[in-house]
Image 1 (spheres, helix red, strand yellow):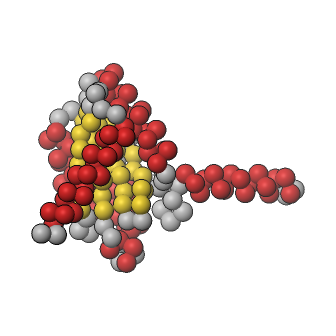
Image 2: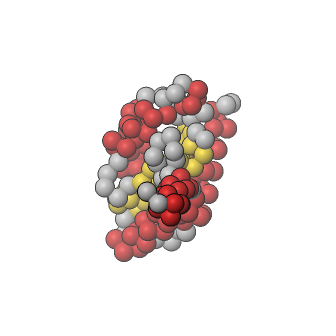
Amino acid sequence: MSSVELAQLGIEWTRYGSLFDQATGLPSGWGFLFDRLEVALARTRRTGTLVALFVLDEPRLFIEHRFDDVVSSLRAQLRAGDTIARIGEHRLVVLCTDILRDAEAAQLARQMLSDAGVMCTLGVVLGGPDDESDQLLARGIAALTQRINSDDL
């Protein structure tokens, strides 16, 4: 392999590393997540459906070395068009599209928590045609923070 080919391979690996978490292979980085949110919200405007944004937090995942198990479980539950991304050391976002009503999102949340196999804190918000991606994500993180604070009481 020539030095040019090696350099190109290094650039591609760096690009991959900036878009995907090395430990799990999950998309990471805010740019990717915002892009997926924009696409999902545009779809709500065309179809009249909703999106559900789930923000999971579990600091013990790394301590217990079970993070990959949780990710595998969540991946198995996702439908075509849904996204899971890592946004922090022990935080994941799951974006589900084509949600018809809030009861469907509640059922998905219950299923995620039971199948994850660990005690996670989960913030859930629904988004529709009038929402913006940054506001939806901010509401999801706020919902998670509220749950964390109420669990500590």
